[in-house]
Length: 158
Image: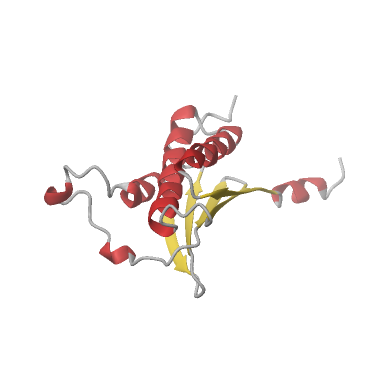
């Protein structure tokens, strides 16, 4: 084995990109990609499911709130896995929003509402989430997760 082979393996980044039209029917496709990528990285079914749910909520928000269900507008998802670090970027073509104005789903007056939990779920299932707003329109959401510390990480010491 050449000496630099191991070093080049450590720098490998697995990258998957997908662009969908703003239709709710396309959400599951993006979720399946997230779950499959996690399972291939050694995360068990439960851990992969929760990361998939965060992605599902992010894509649903991009379609509904970002792109206002306009099928001419696209949502892109980029998955980058470098070692145990997974970074997921979801981008829409909408006008943006103020994250501070999103209702807290744990507030007693919001507990019975059937919507408004997406950002809460993303914050719960992922290590970090951050938004950026493009001057020409569009919101980018970046979610990160260290898969080694993810609950539900399958044992790799077999």
